Structures are given as structure tokens and as C-alpha cells.
Image (cartoon, rainbow, N blue to C red; front, side, top):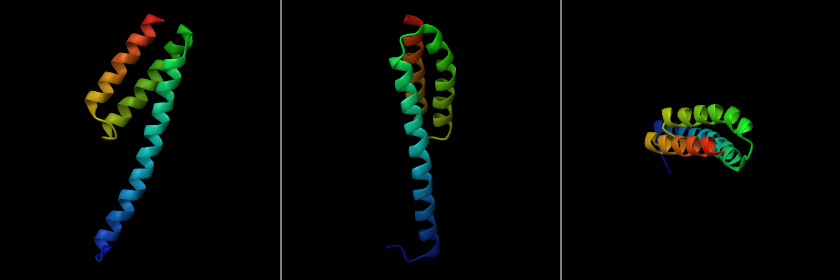
Amino acid sequence: MAHHKSALKRIRQNEKRRVHNKYYAKTTRNAIKALRETTDKAEAETLYPKVVSMIDKLAKINVIHKNKAANLKSKLAVKVSSL
């Protein structure tokens, strides 16, 4: 157990950030899943920019790696164009 005030504060901050990051990562994963399961091209084309924006935001705040974000966006673009 931490004995310094700064260490206790760091523990509180880390927990708060972990929950925050987990929420946004899960929301984005659900959006990606919804886009992948879509069979309607028009719906996919409207969802795609929103999902890409979510992925970019996750990469920007280092929840996911920038290369993973690029791979996800690429695969989703292929999926949308193939519908």
C-alpha cells in the first residue's frame, strides 16, 4: 500500500483514467462491430466517418496504438467499399 500522498493521488488518477479509457474503447469496439455487421452500403457509408473519427480519437489519446488505428481504418474502408 502506498504511503505518500502523491502515490495515493497517482493511484486515484490511474483508476479514473482506466475507467474513462475502458468506456471509450468499448464504445468504439461496439461501433466497429456494428459497421462490420452492416449489409446496407448506404448505412455503412454514413457510419464509416463516425467510426473513423472515434478510432482517430482513441489513437490520439494513446488508448490504442496509431498503427492499430490505421489497420482498423484500412480494413473498414475495404469492407465498406466491397458492399
